[in-house]
Length: 119
Image 1 (cartoon, rainbow, N blue to C red):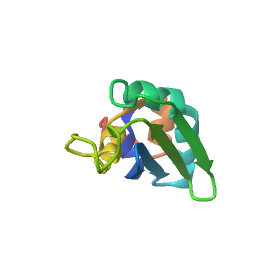
Image 2 (cartoon, rainbow, N blue to C red):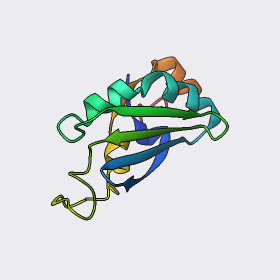
Image 3 (cartoon, rainbow, N blue to C red):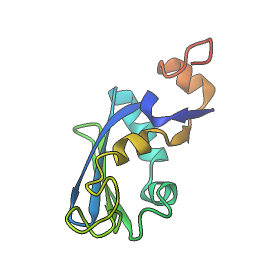
C-alpha cells in the first residue's frame, strides 16, 4: 500500500545559500528502517524534479531516528537573490511529507501506521 510520509514522520527544513536542508524524523523507532529503505536520495531528487537542479545528498542519523537531505541548487540562488516565494525552503519539509512510499499492508497494521479500517 502507498502511505504518505506524514503518517510515519515529521520534518523541518531550512537553507544555506542555494542548498535546502530537510530533516525527516520518524515518529517511532520502528518506523526508521522503513524511512531508510524507502526514502532514498534518488527518490527525493525525483520527487523534487524541476525544483532541485543539483544533486541530493542523504545522511542517516540512526541515533535520532532521522534522515537529513541536502538539496543542492533548490532555492533559485538563495534567499537574498531568489525570486521564489519560499526562497529559504521553509515549506519543502511539508512538501516532502506528502511523498508516498510503499509499505506492506500487514507491516502497516502491525506498526500502527494503518488501522483495520484503512487509515
